[in-house]
Image (cartoon, rainbow, N blue to C red; front, side, top):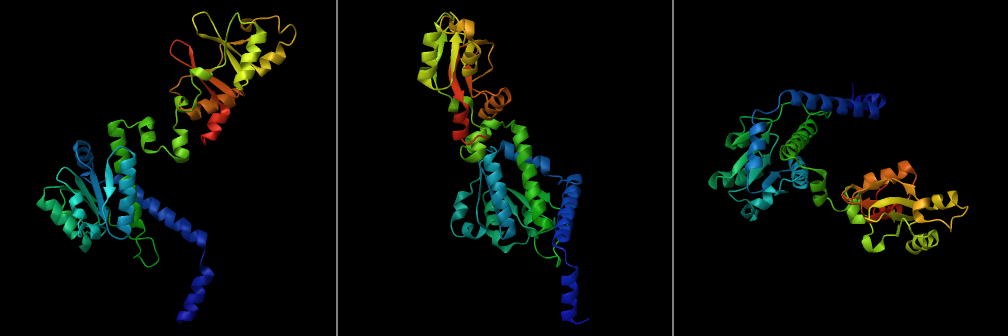
Length: 329
């Protein structure tokens, strides 16, 4: 068959979705096989990283370098100080970034990446712990490594079997496994995650009520014995569509909303706040996640919530518009 006929036959039988499904299925199978035979040194690598007083320096060349950047970024954002060093830049002065208290993670599918040689030599010279990631346990990199995270030697899924596909997926999966293992070992929590993600949608969803609420000076409040004429003025002055009703000890006794006013129109002005308010209102604490507070407002079909302290005294108020302005939806 001529090359033209082969090309025509290939084009006729090609299916983009078929190829995509095959690639994802085979890479998924590769990850499953990897999960069943994790590197012997994986536990030791986690323990070593947990014990280090320095940082984790990740390096790799080409596609391995791209994966290394992602691994370093994931580690840094989950409580493990880490950064990526380009191996070529390392040979031109950036080796000074690597100190004896650090740990180096070097990534090379073949384990013979020439550009990593200066980093390998630097680690040996200054007794820097070296963790190698490669599919070849007998390679230059893995022989030099103190700890070896060996990848399974599985074929790439591309049609020519050469483009980094399966191998980079395995590297990425290993990096994620390492980061999550370190998170769980440290007991890393969402509030700590927010420290490293203050911006964007994710940062907004991790905000606490105390970061968005209006403080004590802006609280619309009335005592239980306050005449409704004054309570209505208090509600109107603050613009939240709600007024909190407190008892003699300053605890939140109830709330009066626009709905409460409509339900109590008959003789409203002659009554006191404590007689009109809805008792046992839904509240949050200042430490409640803002996303959780928004969910509470949606569930109860209300537009504002009081934040109370441990003695049930109001310390803030959160309006649904505060959440929307912060990007929480």
